[in-house]
Amino acid sequence: MTTVSILPISDANGERIYRAIAGDKQSTGRTAGEALDALTAQLEGDEFNALLVIQNFCPDWFFSVEQQKRLSELMNLWRSARDQGQTLPPEQQIELDSLVEVELKAATARTAILLQQAIASMNKHSDRRFVQT
Image (tube, rainbow, N blue to C red; front, side, top):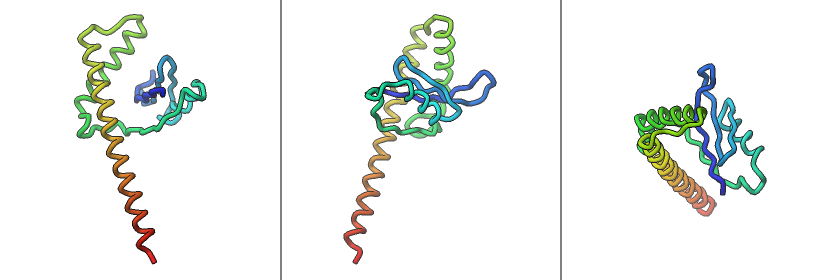
């Protein structure tokens, strides 16, 4: 299964846009959905088979505002280095990798909670069907 990341970024005018990345393919759009649509158009049919959970990019108890700010700073540094054909210094790359891992775990935890809520809701509604006369 292909992993897709969708990140909010700023364009040349300072406007918020979204970049969708999957391996060596990427696209941008005015919305997360537009960026994802442009990316999936580049992927082979069997390359994209996924359940999508789109985060609203607001801090929460899984990933704090400080972590988001630092991740954004490091991603900007990484993009700048990449565009110049360079790499981040090792300590920054380690910090970036660590924050990406923490955010991935946070996304997994958020997904687990959403799944639990969906199952509870389905169970609640299915119980109603059998109780009604």
